[in-house]
Every structure is written in C-alpha cells, then in structure tokens.
Image 1 (cartoon, rainbow, N blue to C red):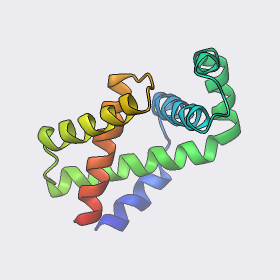
Image 2: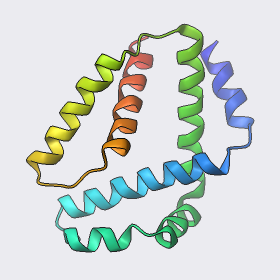
Image 3: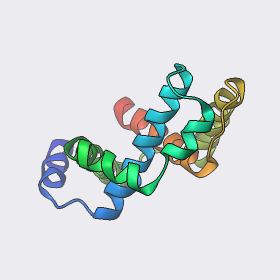
Image 4: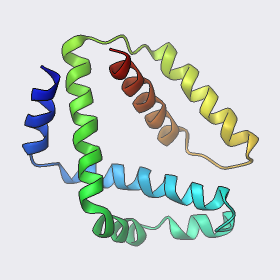
Length: 130
C-alpha cells in the first residue's frame, strides 16, 4: 500500500510552486540554524531572505528539495487514505511548543511558516506511529 504511493509520487512532476514554498521553508530554517549557532547576526538574517537567495538555494539544492516535496505529497496521500487522526488540537499544541522555543531563544518567527512546520511534524509523527 504505502510504498506504492511513494513510488507513484516519486515518478510524478513536482509543481514549481511546491518547490518554491519548500525551498523558502528549508532556506529559512537553515538561516535560523546559522543564527542560533552565532554564524550570522539577526540583522543579517533578513537581508539574506531575498527571492534571489532562495532561487540560488533552489539551484544548489534542487534534488533535495524535490525529494522533500515528494515525501510531503506521499504523506498527504497516505494520511488521506488512512484518515489518520491529525487534529487541529495536536497541531495547535505543537505550534505553541515551537513558538515557545522561538521566544525562549529570542528569535523572530513567521506564525504561518511555523504552523506549516507544526502540521508537517504532527503528520509525520502520526504516519510513523501508524
């Protein structure tokens, strides 16, 4: 069952918009890590989050980004078919926890981006437990 979907999805063409969105998330997360480890200053962070830099990130990491998009698509399909219990409640709990972490570290965050990460986390946890 599930392997079949992963196979089907790994064959399909990945929509450009999904590559764009995932690349932005991945690039943002990478910048956050650099900031946390003191490699870049918070002020530098915003200047590095430009469409040009994201495009360069896509060029440099294309296969990895596509792989991630395919994984997310496969998870969505498995979740749909198995009607896995991904409640808004679980996502909200995860979201609160992630936001608390950002606040503790004194970092800025984009609630929508964090919500997406929280949903992804809860979904993958649900699928792995499944």
